[in-house]
Image (cartoon, rainbow, N blue to C red):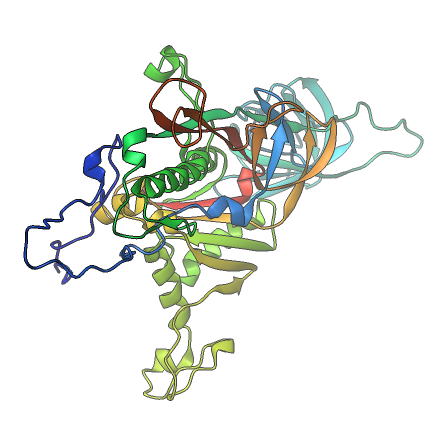
Length: 472
């Protein structure tokens, strides 16, 4: 069914910004020869409300300095050992067997003589328990089964093997060999982000008749001040969106050929190392049970924040609302949702800010995913297009990692920004004025140029605990 919300009139995507500051930027439609002078509202009307979209990283992360071109950190590997692509060379019923481990990336197995293992058929679930009697090569091990019936599956059946303990005879030597801790090393590199606003000296002397304002409460009758403040606000938004959307320049790409390296933004990292819900929006408890089950297999972080677009927000609200007894029965009585305690004499609140299903989930609308000039426009144009992102689950709290710069373990938020800085140069947020107007005296250019610069990257620690909600 076609939407009842018409496409025209619609929202404007480019209401004001122009590439250069000219006299045409000023409101000049006065004709004093006209006998009827217009009645004017003195203050500019803020028809789009707060237009900035930056807030996400301020809510979930932190900023800290770094003095290197590359940020590196180590994340813990699994404590216990499990292989999922193991095949036996013995026939069904055999008392002993030699297994070959063919898991991706495994060149040397961590299984030792004397350890006890569980071996399960991946397709049927039939299993054996056995003790390791030999490790002939770097990727093979020999077992003796505890069951009298011997091996419960056929030769070359793909199995999963994990270690659950060990057993040694009386008067024997101890375990042969030891295991080293396994760490995964990750890195990211900062990128330089710049912007500039310029206005010539003559236009700076022009007074407007409308009081202009911006989201950071800057006001005045000088139009160029509004443009300068909006450039600053736009730059601050880019500081966040660049950290969210950045991708590394692939080898052989046009960007790499031109000398650019890119960076690993939040979406890129979670797409590659995190969890991805490919169905757009989970709408039922069964869907959320699937997500909870995946989180159980990861870090099992107790509290998680959901940053979602309007569609996913409504889907969560609708799911929780239908769990109410009154709503499910179709009763005309007022519904009561937990602590909301709604009754017939008050507006029914169907907006939920959080729920618990195995873990605590706190929901927040993410303006970046709703804004029509950003990803909100992409979602509106093709709500179910492959790759359309509807939300992000971010674990709350901090995690311990080995910081290569500090040379020791440190507590870090799961999501935080590192910016370049030293004792003499701080590149977190630089701004300076050049030219010969507006108080600047650095050149003979009859203009004021306001320059902005930052050098930063985002570190997504424990990406396996994040969930990206998207289509496809």
